[in-house]
Length: 115
Length: 112
Image 1: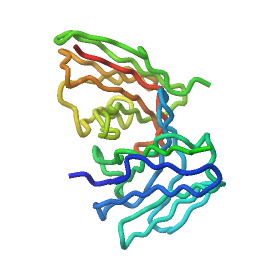
Image 2 (image 1 turned 120 degrees about the horizontal axis):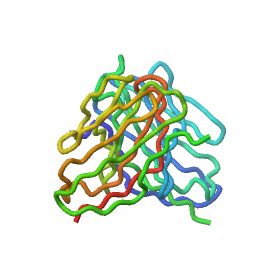
Image 3 (image 1 turned 45 degrees about the vertical axis):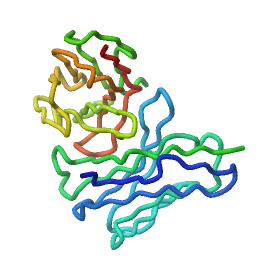
Image 4 (image 1 turned 90 degrees about the vertical axis):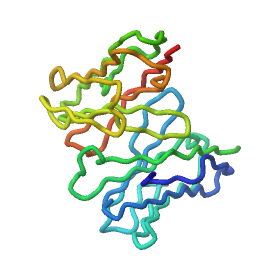
């Protein structure tokens, strides 16, 4: 059963507008969440993270929001730029590290920024 | 600064052949990982090594073996390749287990 779900395989947004990527999780033991960005033919790169003790974390144009009661997080990109076109993976870690289940990835959302 | 280096970048195998994917990191990281990425499946953990001298199974270990050769190097071996192992393989490393992962650029493997 998939513990981290990204229900939108793709998302198209106009340049300059806000991009909102969503992620839901089912494991209540997850307490640290990360977003990775991946360009074609490259490995994923870390983008931003949030601990469960917070509900928001900002880094420049990127903000991650966490709603623990809804087991939902979202990544906001404002304003969206052509270089943001990539696949975005949501990932989660349970408290205490978790061993082999330590870092669980979603299936990814392909963000396309239209000029 | 090379980061995480994987070789080869591309490989085509016939069913039953064996091969080893190599991975090296120059960041003095303790932990290293092997993931596979399949269309519509995200990234799935094959094996990981929390520290030099230890290896553990991940979500999809069947058909693979790993060796943590030293602190820098972590190899993934397919003893008898199967078409189901056609995938893109990523090696990653982190300072501590499950801290921020740094990924290599991937190996695209096709098994015919």
